[in-house]
Length: 60
Image 1 (cartoon, rainbow, N blue to C red):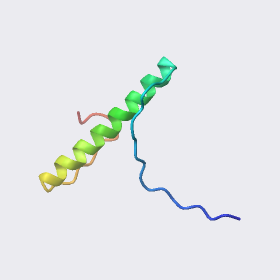
Image 2 (tube, rainbow, N blue to C red):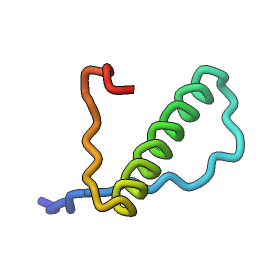
Image 3 (cartoon, rainbow, N blue to C red):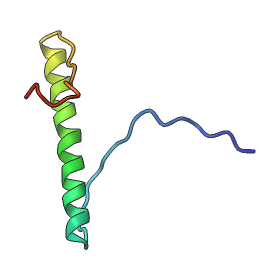
């Protein structure tokens, strides 16, 4: 039996072309979500604060 390593981070490179329009929309939404998280984490590090996202969606 092969022991698998746990992946703690996912890196999104670049997507050059997606044939399916619905798949392209999903990739774009995922990209925006990743970008938003990175920006919020980076800005909170600059301000020396911890970013905690409101799971219920009422914080924006």
